[in-house]
Length: 464
Image 1 (tube, rainbow, N blue to C red):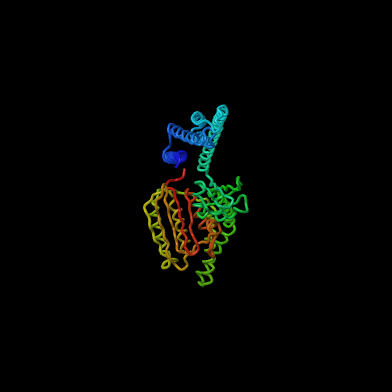
Image 2 (cartoon, helix red, strand yellow):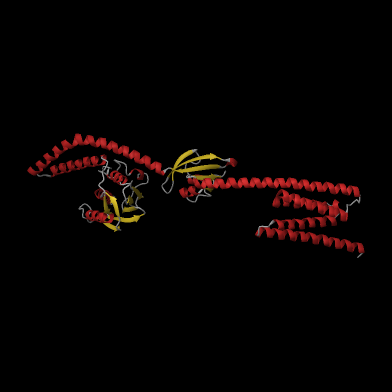
């Protein structure tokens, strides 16, 4: 092999060795910055090596006129990205020094000294301009990134603290983001189609829903950029219950007016009729008179129930052991001739003393036990459980009866609402009224064929 061929082979080998070295440096620095936050000194050292590598490649491939001079530009841009405008200018000056060193060492391909000066000067100026522009761009990107980060954090804080649920829906009608309150209200719904969660989400801008947990919510939606939309879900269960209570109280007022009229128009004549029937039964006992007297007594009890429901109960509070009270009521109920042999009562109670009206709570328990027994025409068990809760006593009454349909549940405490032939629909309305006057609450859980469970929550002390 000729001497010139050896020189070319050695040059090519050095060229590829340098490229390999440059790749090793880039990969090594990438791994370093991936697993450890680099400091400024390390970055400047890395850029100095990059500038040196670019200078060697340029010197071995044509000097200042080499096409590989373009390698300086990504190094300057990287300096702007990692070190900002000042770092970009420093790397640009390092590149200018490197290029001048290449020009001094290797010159240019045509050998014209004056042209070499002009070419090097032009490229040094381009380095500085690229450093300035890339530095400005890097600062602009950093500023924009900080603003976006601030907006993102602000949005997350606002969405986390807002009381409503907020959902983001993509153009394919899939829920892509839900805030914390939205997850509490609706559960894990990310990825689901919005029409699988809401019934009115396609056709209406605002609508009402009832969640699977029984919460009443008001929903509204509005468009977002990029064909997305936001759905806001507000829990209005408390307002809905207040409205229901207000409507129930209005109906009770109507019951009061009706009861007053009944007392005046029916009570006195009815007393006379019952007295006459009593005299007839004493003089001539027969089944027809007994039936008539029984119906008159039932009508009299109905008037009593109307009068009881029309009045606002007055409470005579006393420190009472609710477990002992429940024991007394369940024992009396178990001895009731109407239910002996068909309905059994199981009591599980812990001693809890609360400031209540024992007579009124006894009436509540009796009404619930009677309601449970009437829901089991074929007989069964009624469970009564008394347990403690924070600052309250819980009383559960559960039966094995026919259950209540979902459409009827919201109305069971309404006056005159009854599912039983011959019922007045005032028993549960009175129960609800007594519990609310105590400052407590009553809830019902039921399904057709699965029985019914009432849960009473009574505060331990009188409400202030």
